[in-house]
Image (tube, rainbow, N blue to C red; front, side):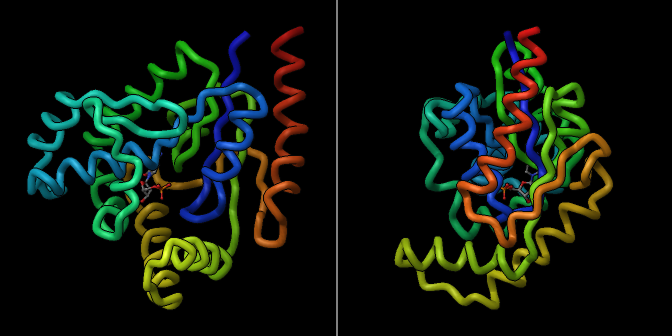
Length: 222
Ligand code: DC
């Protein structure tokens, strides 16, 4: 029995935290597609390739091997999980993620993974493009202010010196680019279950989502 769970939503809504917990609970492979766009951004920055250099970008992606091991992203054998979260990558990733050819190549890799394994995949275009046949689709939201507060707390906990207002502005900017780009913008598909996490704690969110996943597992098992 193979199932797939799609989770979409804006940056900082809590998708990855929740997806990691659910992946363990239901024994699904967690695929963080945002990490893959970040990975491409990191590789491109290292090589000085900007988002307009499409041919170079495609070559870079085609010559790289992406895989996940225990929630960590490896590219060509290197664990890049920490580095892809740095400010330089975070501030530029939506520009690379808006390039059609980059999206096509990464969507192909993501579709291939889901052919062979049960997955819980999070991103922006999962329900619409990557896993249109997913057994369950979620759309997770929270207000920009709540998302900025969460991010601020997370970074200050790691002793990073950051300003709340800057984080909020970056989130608003990233939302705008992700939702208004021409290719596969962030949007809720009709058959997705929407969950606003603004006033919910993690346990409550997991509990709500688990009910839908359990139902899907039951119906696949029938
Ligand atoms: O989820 P995240 O913040 O790590 O995502 C990083 C960027 O990649 C963000 O700007 C949105 C983009 N992204 C995307 O366009 N499509 C996806 N499936 C996942 C992420």
